[in-house]
Each structure stands twice: as C-alpha cells, then as structure tokens.
Length: 275
Image (cartoon, rainbow, N blue to C red; front, side, top):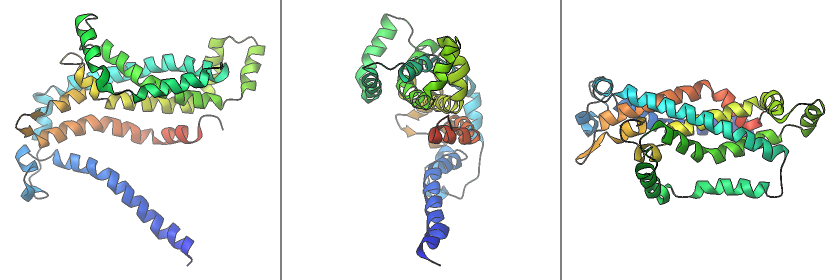
C-alpha cells in the first residue's frame, strides 16, 4: 500500500472527521447544557452526571415569550432578504451586462463599506431613529438596516453568477424585442436560479444571525431572538442553562434550514448557476 493510498483511505478521512467534530462540538455542548438547570450547568461534578430537565424550555416559552421573538426574527429576516434581492438583482444585472468605466470601482467601494466598524455609527443611528425619524424599535427599521448591511455581499454574489451567463443569450433576447424587465425575469433569473437561491439563503442566514443591530436598535416591539439571548444575563453572571436553551431554540431553525438546503447552497457557491 503506497503513501497516496494510505493518505486517501486513512489520514484524509481522519482529518475530515476531526475538523467536523471540532466545529460541531460547541453546538453539541450548547444543546447538552440546555437540559441542565442553571445550578448544574456551573458545577464541574455535574459535567456529565445530571438529571435531564426540560425546565429551561418550559420557562422559555411560558415566561420569556419565545414565540414573539421568533416571529419577529422571521418577519425581519424574510422581508429584509426579499428587499435586498429586489434591489440587488437589478443592480447586479446592470453591472454585469451594461458595465461602465467605474463599475469595478463601485463594486470595490460597496465591499469596502463592510469594513466600517458598526460601533462608529451606533450613536448617530440611535439618535436619528429615536428623536427625528421615530422608527426606533420597529420592524421597518430593522428590515432596512439588515438590507443595507447585506446588500454589498448580495450584489457581489449575483454579479458573479450573472457574469457567467453568455452575453449572446441577452443579445438574442434584445433582437427578439425583449425589454430589460423581460431579460431579467425570463432569461437571467431562470439561468441563474441556483446562484439566486444560494444568495437568498445566505442573506437570510446573515439576517437571522445579526445580533449587534437587532440588540441595540430594539427594546420590545421588534426585538428578535438575539435580544432574547442577550436578556438571559444578569449583574451576578450568566444563566447558562437558560442561555443554552434559548440559544438552541434560536440556532435550531437556521441549522435545519441549512441542512435541508445544503446541496443547493454548495452547488450555487461552488459552481455558479450556468453549467
């Protein structure tokens, strides 16, 4: 048995399993801890020997109004994703099929906005939305903020997928009298459906996982699951049992979604939409 065969049959699978376990262990420990009481969660002697309890999940649904926070997360994530795609698809189409002299500069500038520290604009955002616009702690504000945060990434991804579509197909459509909306709806989107789906999925995940802005721009009305997680702490410390249960309930839906959509996601991110 040569070295290549040994590496392919034993070493590479072992490394892959090691990396998978390394990434999965924090999720496993979070779920594991969610079935402990707050007292058991901080005692080393109860690391593995403890009596499982659903107390944290019962308190989460009965006393912490979990479903209201979950509904807010769904509303803001879905509408922010839709709004981002509504703006991002035409923008990416224009840059891919009708580029100008400064198209690349605009793309780089959009991506550079992701380098801006969020803390630098926290006070102006809070001051304006509270005192002038009156939209603090509203779904509208969170949807707009999440859309603006993810718009550069969405445009970059869609631009990459659209560039793979042969321009001859677009030119043939123009010769047949198809307008711009028809080109996008009937030609571009069907050909780039894989890329569009993976982009939408990633955008939804980013919106769902956003914690900085959803915690600081909400109090009660539009508070998402991130706010609920942040609320499970006190001056005397963290309630690890309750915190793990709330985190599990917040992470669970998006993990399940990613699991069922993993083939579409990998296909779109790896190969693009046009084969």
